[in-house]
Image (tube, rainbow, N blue to C red):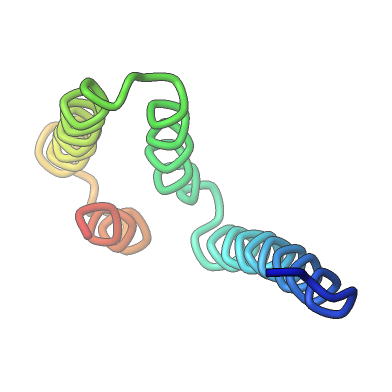
Length: 106
């Protein structure tokens, strides 16, 4: 099977187009998260960046265990932070913080 010039050009264009589309979606989603949640957006970005780092740095046999442990530890720390501010500091929990916690669990 021989490839024509237009088939090669089309496949290279679609590959680059899809990569740039994902980059623009990532940048737009990050900007929207920062605009909507302010400094609490760090609570969403931290587990996402760490999960990607774990996926790229671990062997396929170890990825599931380490990613699961990290995500559960992160959610536990967020739960403890919410309970600490609500019960020990007697402050009402922030709506943004509660919403970010719900988004994290999904």
